[in-house]
Length: 138
Image 1 (cartoon, rainbow, N blue to C red):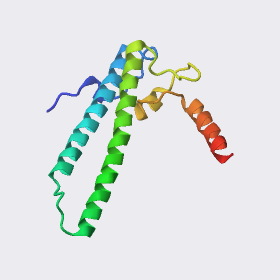
Image 2: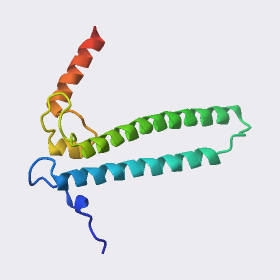
Image 3: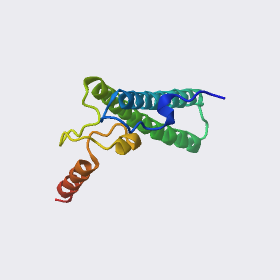
């Protein structure tokens, strides 16, 4: 039987907001997420490298190039996500993690558990998205 790590037991909701147990929970969650992304990226790069670049059929080459372009776009999104994960870990270190960058109010623990890179409360995020939509529609 494997031992359960404290953060795997569930979000520690007791105690004051962003106490040491909560910070550790989110740090481990973020580090595990980053590790999973990097592992997946290595596997993708290995698969791309092992593919035969000398496909004789033009349709096969075109299909392979399309697949490669899709993979590279996905890798770019993952690179940006890793940057956001690193920024969240920095916020844990400097004591600003879990607080809305717009209002300064605490972001709900459940929101952070679902989206640990969140920088705004749900209400502030919704306001932000409504403003973006208004600007896009103009």
